[in-house]
Length: 153
Image (cartoon, rainbow, N blue to C red):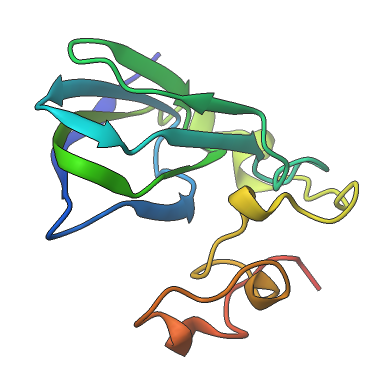
């Protein structure tokens, strides 16, 4: 079972933080509750599980609804699209299981060869060395060019 958690609130506004680069969470299971406010855009893009052949393939786009919660595995690659208008607040709850984190599945993950080129929506400028092959670096993020760990060597 879960024996630890970490909570925080994220805020996206058109004049501040717009979205969030593709990433995985430091959780075993994440709950993401939309608290509002009025906004447009800011969808949540989901890709495959970390280490799976499709981990950089798009699987689903979730559109936040005030008061609704989306639940996903922490190792599921995801990112927040830029907000278009308004302000969005979300309560994030990361759940941890120390029992699971002692298993080989967690300690020795099996990183499989990718099944093909990634979907552009699933690449990360902070984590993917090949980001520039699929998208332009966002303004102010060029320092990440060529860095990252993915794809694995």
